[in-house]
Length: 394
Image (cartoon, rainbow, N blue to C red):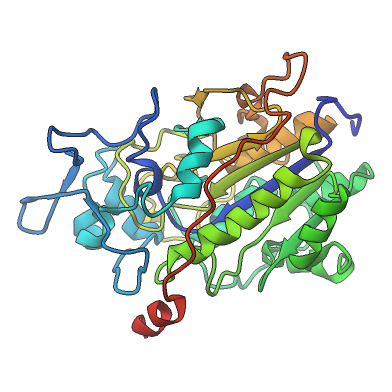
């Protein structure tokens, strides 16, 4: 344990944005093999959900990148009603017609350029049909520990309750002397496990340090980069162009880093944000025996035993497999499995023990990095008036 494998890779970077489904961002990605929207003769999606009156509400192009007036929800109950036991026909009834909005290449040129070049994962699901905090707990610990919503939990994990002995991936990395940092803008994901903050002030640091470390080629073994959750994460009601531009800056910094040829970056989103996706989440391995903190008659048959909806995910690396679309089922614990594969670490729960590791997206058998020279991509579009967008939401 702790012995490095995957010798081509020294740095794993995770950039997790907020609250968009695969179809919402990549449904219009016209790349061969990508499972997006079904397109009619008029060039528009034929995908729909019934409205309250039973009439179909079709997926439609959002008029702007501002989400100020969108009424969508990704709560446990709304998500499960949207899912409707695998029919994925409850998005409009559970939220509103806003759930059928999508953005395309005209709105997100950088994301579309990225997904046209690097491996895109069209079977990457969030870890649970619920909000941000449970999904980000899965990212760090392969379990939500009962959490189903976003209020700060009353009971916080203060020790490792598992036979594997580690509560989070950070503790597993610490045990074997592997470096890590959580670079944040306004709130670190590490705060979901507050006891970690008390002894890791030097490793939970502002995102400006990420750009310094990337430029110097001194990123740690594992990096988690957090956007500004208040204004630049793409979460409703924000102008998503602000978050997309931040993602561009982070990924551009990695591509220009002297350590580019030894780095894997995973761009993903924590959950679907209430927006429609046409692929039903499949069953998932329960992480542990901790049930979701909902009434026993309100589980929808889900004891963390189903994935959440698909989220946009692209694997960016010099070693990325060219022209590749991954149809392998992944979720946030696949990132943990990648870290565990790289450093031969034990699993944190039954979920990551059974997860794929994203290595299918890498051409590690190639004699040289396929993207040794980073491709030139269109930058993200700046927000037209982000302040006005946020003001309109009040």
